[in-house]
Amino acid sequence: MDYAVARKSQLDSRELLLLESEVKNQGKNMVIAYVLWYFLGLFGGHRFYFGKTGSAVAQLILSLTVIGMIATFIWWVVDAFLVHTWVKEHNAIVENRIIDNILANRGLSERYPI
Image 1 (cartoon, helix red, strand yellow):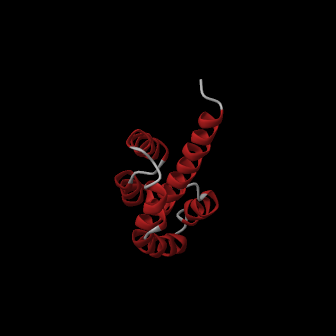
Image 2 (cartoon, one colour):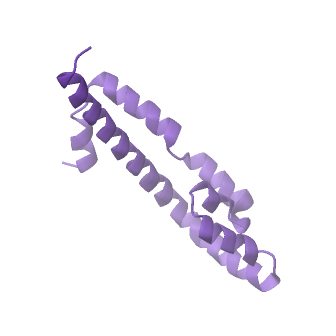
Image 3 (cartoon, helix red, strand yellow):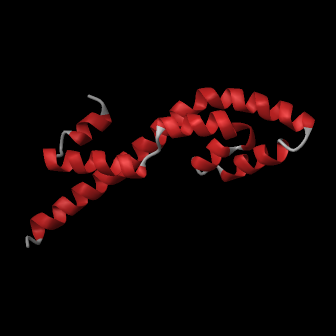
């Protein structure tokens, strides 16, 4: 059984709705990521979105020169294949953190009912 599925199976329907809502709020959106990649990718826009500030600044600086623009274009093409994975990985991390919080709060509420 998949680890993520096993963890989700511990949650009731209310907790699953909360999980879905929080992942939607805190996670990254695939469409936004690709729009940023397409329109601002040569300047590192999509990398800023993912918090990859160092490489985003590098792309931005490289874009200022002709030679740098060629290198950034190649980088931009490679990133087209990476954006999908970045979104999935980020959202999986967010999901696991939220599940941890839900399970931890469940334990507290069982010990200290209101």
